[in-house]
Length: 147
Image 1 (cartoon, rainbow, N blue to C red):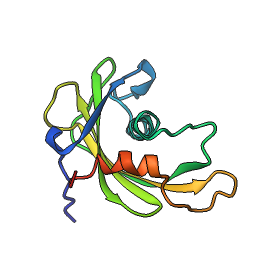
Image 2: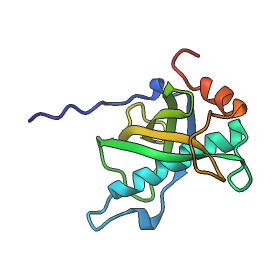
Image 3: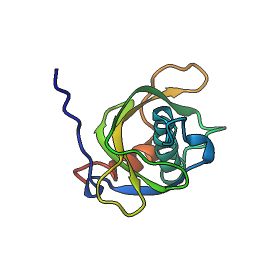
Image 4: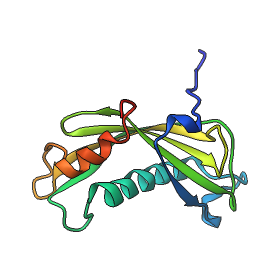
């Protein structure tokens, strides 16, 4: 069986955030462990929601749960490499959003890893699906390919 990895390039992403690697990110093989990339994905997506969409992680009536994620790895990175997380929106639904996220060495044109990350918005009190709040939707539209 042949697996085709979906390479990712800087120009495919609308927004970038710096990521500081930590000593504890490295595993016994001397590179950032695969599970740490999901933490990077979570940080990049939520930083955007907080800064651009007005999400208040402690008080917002609506919050977002991760329901799916995937990652392809292309080249290893290790502490103390400076990284950047690129963010775009692949699909924007009524209550969900699927991001495309790339992890780049600072200034690199090709991602070291890339994947998808899906949030479903829920009402905090009931944890039932709800429409994406207007201010967050407006911010997410800015990350779509069409914008």
